[in-house]
Length: 271
Image (cartoon, rainbow, N blue to C red; front, side):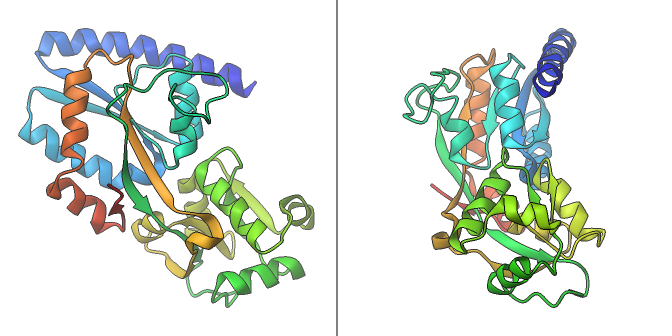
């Protein structure tokens, strides 16, 4: 059922893309469709607005969602000019040169892929930190005891995959925790952040940038030993009808002006 919904979305997106393309041709503007991980919503939207003011012949349309969902939409034919993932895994699965591409998909325009940004995984707590969680060590103990309620990302999204690594680091079994009723899930990092912000959970494992944007307190930051580096790769998609314009936008994302917007919410350059 989920795959049918994704295919339907891709067809709808493709149809809307054709209509939008016709409209853009009438207006004389080139429309770029950018697929971005949900955690990029605030910063990338701001950068896009700056870019369109400086380049009035360009119109940027954003599609923000979990990297796994975006990867599937690209695979199913949704129009996309530039893809920025919250982890290498989803980009690898679209890159024919990657060893981690079991389906041999070929959607990355070779020579354009780069590691654009680095983020951090943090333990965000509800306002006032009612559960008194001070660290990931505290969280691990409380999860084992069954006296905390934690929001995490689904296993098919990067923030959920980083969380699984943290569980493994502490020797925790996700299935066992789920059976205790101490976990709740979100289909992307924004859903997890919202649960923490609304106080429906004691805490959540999210990105530092999302915690900052939502005004949440971060009790602790995961180390690279716990979950690895959080790298955001970017690449032009080889089915793009506007590859040169997409390359120019990707170049702009590496400028000091764009990096200042990313840095304001907690990203750092990865290149």
